[in-house]
Image 1 (cartoon, helix red, strand yellow):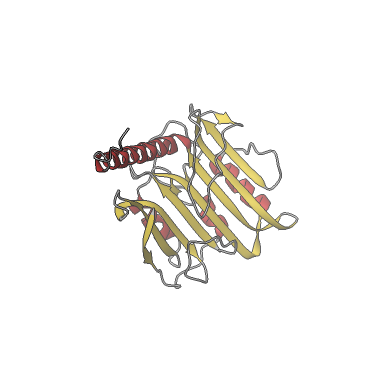
Image 2: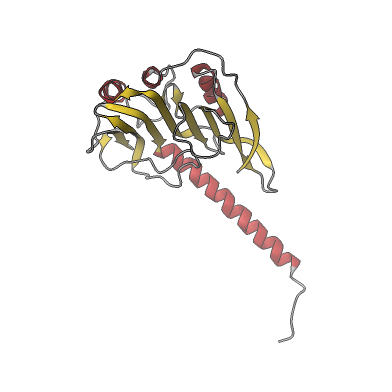
Length: 248
């Protein structure tokens, strides 16, 4: 993938509290059978197009700085298909690296074949702290009861039939890259992990939301494209060396 454009948003505008943004419900419906209580993170929804995601993020916080990353064509040049959108409130201009002090940040990954968002990563931080019990209560109200086994980690997953699952996870991605795999038996997977700074208080949290079925379609299409490109490269190489026949 080749990144080719930056979009800077001014620092003016009202500050949006992390908890309020977290519990905002999306008005869109998700055309996938296996769903959580809500298929979005602060309104950024699974299945949305890059245009829809960008519009949602711009409305969410006018201070966001944006980085778009595009899929590469066979010739190595950037295509018109968006592979990822990264948007964050931060001091510096570099949206590529990991920065755990981002007040608010999203990395959303898209399918090249369908253009749909299939994975959403979110960072949130507040120097004054975030109430863990209040945020957990908001998560439960929005997505359903946690199935996590450890304090400070909220987990809510469903299988491919839409039933709650303890085995379907999906946090193997983050700011620097999207998911590298999927589980065909799973539906949507949500994980929220807090960064505690005091009892009941977090300095911030990270959110992972993955749709395994959309990821399956996206990654299988991507691998098929890579295999076809490799086969074509091999064919061209064979053509170029056809006349090289050493004496036997």
